Length: 498
Image (cartoon, rainbow, N blue to C red; front, side, top):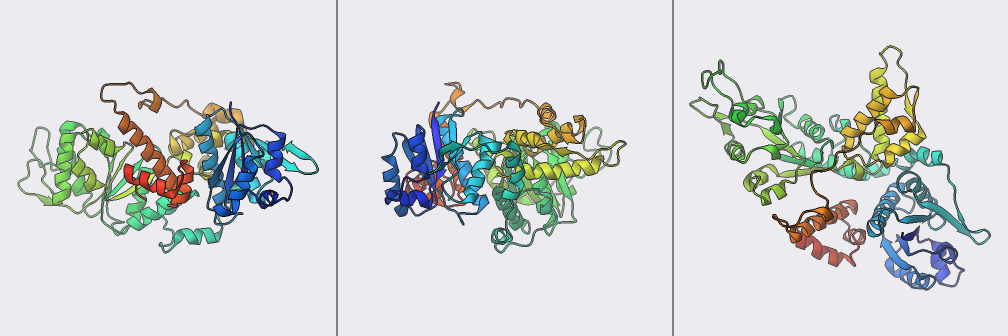
């Protein structure tokens, strides 16, 4: 089991390399034994290089430096993202059972505060501090204090919000229904708001429960087509034999049972938006007919003698990897590129840093309001223990699972406080994915190692660029590449957009 020390490099540490004492990090290395030391740094590289060479001589442990760009050394949101990505990288390298130690003394008070939060709510690390007088000691922070501190730590300043807006229209009511505070969701909503005024097709990718339909409704509701029909189609629920009738309509007498004219989805949505949910479920033969209707902007009902012109904006969504489906011949390439004009990706809840706590509070407010009129209604809150349990959970079902879990806990809880046991009972065991794990896939039968490695590379390169907000130097450090030039080569090789 690897033992890893993580710490920000502070000014006191830099002075130590110039002969100004040991410094907090070196003191910890002298007092404790570690297999690796991961140092987070927001100073210029040339300023910390002498220190890194010096501190490496103070320990037998491997010394790794993770470079991070902070808008300010006191910006809680920037620090939280840097710490989360670094700890995740450490656990991927050494395994989930790694013994983590976070050093509170180096760096700013804001950095120490974030170490406390992630140690108590996400990663279960030991906290230490050091001083010349008392040496190195373990810090015992009350469990409750860490949980209660989270809402204050993740709040954004008005300057942050102004910077994120950056020329985009003021927040619209429909987009206000998408509950979020995380940076990744702010970027998604900003892109969706920019897409709303246009008529180009929108393609929304994302896991089940990530809010694809809510995003589609917001785009329609803030577009010039608002007030016109928003027709939702579950493509996976359309029987094959009824596809043409459902999408294009039919005339009276066109077939047995057609006792009246029927407008299909395209005509129903005329002037508005057609939301094709789970579009990846369409059969290949139906994909060709859908493509023809999109290209010609007209449909012919079954039994009809003339085409009917239609004006619809298509918003398609899927939880599948449609590019992979295209490569494997299950989805038409021409239809994919017809749909994927403006592409939006809804992130899973586990990647929405800071949103779970915020969503818990807002969803609980909603439940309390909903239940208030019922006999014997009790206004409820979530205990600190229950909150921490829910914050640590991975949420494979995303926001939908979170809302259902909270509703179960609300109904089953016996008092005014949902305790940890009641929250645990409300969690459902997640079904195993039908997709085999990366290291457990069967060989033969079409297995291709190059394709698998490329998929893994694209996944992590895309995540790194997203978390680094396009900063290639930071993205390179997140995936363990030596420089931004090396990262740029990887991005080109695997077709990941910068």
